[in-house]
Length: 432
Image 1 (cartoon, rainbow, N blue to C red):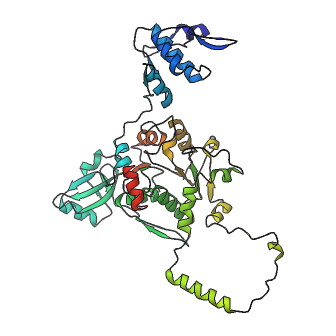
Image 2 (tube, helix red, strand yellow; image 1 turned 45 degrees about the horizontal axis):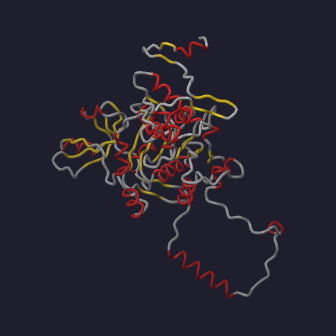
Image 3 (spheres, rainbow, N blue to C red; image 1 turned 120 degrees about the horizontal axis):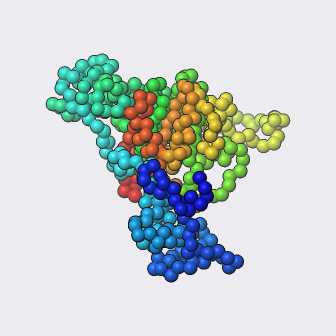
């Protein structure tokens, strides 16, 4: 292909033409960039976006030049929301890329709804009774569901009687495996609603190696994912757990962070560390505090003795160890940066990606293709909290991965609706 062909245009297989636009209306000399056209669009460009040292404004100038020269419709295609708004201010039509845009009915459901809304399958009373007495059942009407689709089997004569189930494929429905997390030397957490039961079933199923989760703030996405993963690492199902988060600041950035990779990433993955600290710390009973106060009073009444100086403590008090630090020291917990993930192969591990709604489709593909044999990936995110200007609720990597891989026998998706963090957090998530 000759360079001149790119300016003249190259025919594409679909009947279109691809060419590189060299804008004749923008000139550069020792005084900088200048526009030589006086069309109404360029007059608006001079008034609104006169600084041509910005590449975005020069792209807009090129689009204006094409729109003035061509008879047909001219559409500026961009993923930059600011560029799109600028183009529309100049009277240019602007669109997002449509190849990776996903139409997903679950997006709006999980962004604002507080009540749980899951698909139901009405069955005869004797069918529901038979399912309750065994581990699985085959219902031909369920064949239309994707594999690992969660559904509520409901008594058609008494709708208040229902049993949750997972469609394994071919109309076969299985009972849910787990409804609680049990951490060794830590806490036991039980699912608080139907969505959390669905999620725990997917997290503990060894046949499901990719789990995607939509849920607004406070629904338990991070806590349940970290808890189920930690228990399986403790029991030897997986060798280690990896945690990462998309580095996308909310509001003003605080600048560069000092230290090693783990130290730089810690502020970003702090929600996961908070979950680990909660899970690995047993709740104190009221009598424990009373015993502690009595022991302290006895110690205060004893004669004071001069403590012997320990040479190892001469440099000051030691920093108390956090509950999760033994996991990082033993290599069972790793903090990963997405920018360094390319080229890696991760076997026998669980990879949790928090704030996955900030991913681009390309980044989501890069992460998922890193997973080796015996590994599991968990993508969790809130589609109502997207700070990345290059993606939105329909084009981010989380919804892209869910919709492109939905139907695979090793993939499951769960929607979480009910916030369990606090009443204030739930009301704020719904109304603000």
